Image (cartoon, rainbow, N blue to C red; front, side, top):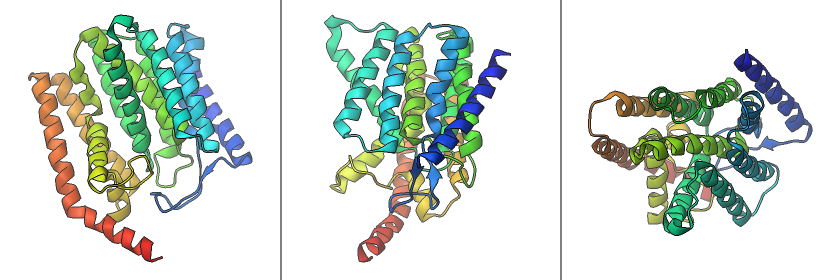
Length: 323
């Protein structure tokens, strides 16, 4: 009954938000960097922090510091969805929220600040990579669903977090997917959504890694990770400012230049990550070798894809410059 009530409240919260966003014109207008062509409500991913608030109300205040961090990072992200927030302000909130998460994890140790700083940079990088990957219908919700389901399966064996926490997050993702995972999306996640769900996933994944001592579990984010890192490297080679928006990710080329439907591209990313995660959980192999093989295969696939298709994006840029 708790899960039914939570689902109903999340659905009602999303519908209520649609009315608010429509009234106050919180929308996403297509531009040259966009992969969509219609004006769409922005910020539908607000259901992710809402779902965690509901978790606390229904199951207890066990992860208070995490919730404070999630609230802070989602608040500044939501403001950024409405009006532009300076990059340094967003980064400051992300760092502060990460420290709150680290405190919840119990890893704040003054004698090991180097490790904390490295973890801070790494986790903040994941948040921003997740945000960069949110560019077509269904990809954020679909990919997050695959990651959370993998974590739920592992949690059944390792018990590193309350199962209800992951289940509530999955409910929020499913509700969001109902409105976003379609040809004509009813809403986009916005920064509040992509950053919020990334923060939740990092928290769960971090607890798993800390309890097991197995860093190779980052394989659950392999597809996003390889795409993001290699795209950054590609842009550096092109001597571009990597902090500026762009449409050079592999998924963007698929949707924009190859004209594949957004849902098809999202399903491709979901399927690849699902197969990788299943292999990590059930294949009786050395997990570090498995991680290395996954990264190698994905990297080769990325390079081959770019060699064959990037010229289409170059042609697009030339047409834009002429206009």
